[in-house]
Image (cartoon, rainbow, N blue to C red):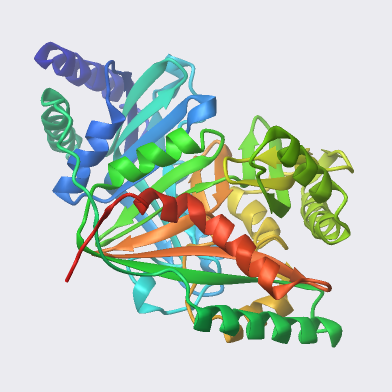
Length: 467
């Protein structure tokens, strides 16, 4: 191990020497390869050390990374959050230099984080996160297919001391690769729905239907929050491992700041930007899975012929395609949706792809396509006003954006649904559904319960505390 880290030090020195003439450079992103890294161990150890981190996994694509600690944090609040964030990113763009080309890498994650569903909520529950919250990690473990890379991001001033501290940190994590004993969550109390809440939901949906009838909006997405309290907290590692196993096609993520960890398994790609191509998922309309193959197929056909669900899906497709037309050409999608099957639910799904035609920044793209009708409504501005008035909870990062990007206009972002906030000894899980003309309040309530299962099922077999 020591010889490996000695080689890292020598390679960094050679890299810095080769960049000595670059006077405008303030930061180095130094990459090397590493073997035999157990991501579960890393997450458990940094969790015990209370470090901020960001985890991202796409098991089916064999991609995962963990960013640890901040080198730079760019966070903004308010309605101009994306504009202010973008300006700060642009000011940094020519101050970084990297050696990624040595490893044939271009899309290395650099800025990690997310955007809240809407700005200016000012809610205590979400006070560990800003409206726009991104950071460049000091250390990044990055697994892509069969290779694992170790990236150190360093400020030019005192880079040797920073590098030594980061090396020591990595060495302490990797030297003892014994898997920490998995601790369990001990549930003190749970609030996952009651008859009173069900009736309140029915009233809320009926109120939304009246607004639709009056022409205030054509669609609104309403959400619920449910709560679990713990007398003892387990490790987030086990939760993420279960989500990755159960939902290999989803984006499994965890974003930790201070006393809060926002995590989930999102099936919905908001945008992937790579090599001048942008891709997105239109995902709306859902139905449960069948208990048998025949029942599952019957439910699939029911979804594919449901006028209500098809109209919802069409609205999302048109919104994304129209948004793409502002900065892209050759927009491609099939007018007929296909089915996206997850273990507990199936959705109408339309992949959309286009060629970027303008030098549009990542944040300009995100601002154009979020929030979609799938998580807010149509028109989104009117729906958003009613969401704020009708929902008692703050959405925070739920239904916002989670993901990563770099200076090469490369990035990938998920809509942060199927998610929850773990804050100290409390867990808050969120789910929503679209209300349109013809929606049945009871059916929508059952749909939300279905969407809460990916999170709540993680605790199904946990110990219940008897007081």
